[in-house]
Image (cartoon, rainbow, N blue to C red; front, side, top):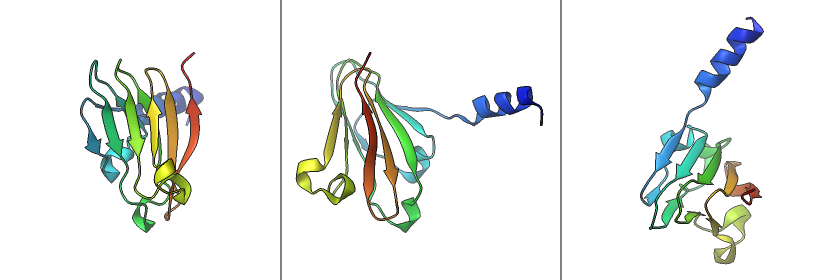
Length: 114
């Protein structure tokens, strides 16, 4: 495969989903790899599904695209940290990366807007 074809295929492989209302994310949605919360006036609360063997290896970037916050939460807390660590709040332009090891969800990165 040529470099040009490889780059073209990489662009095609990137998938994106935008959520304008609060929701529990599904495995199908998490496969998109990039999820944007986007609402002008209401927080978009995104809940990750239960961490189990079927979710092992899921890795998604979640960004707040709208003026209202986007929250990302998981039952039991990220990394098993409990209720005190169960939600990440993102302001416009902020993002986090979530990863499941098959037992727990982890927040791998949280970036403030430039």
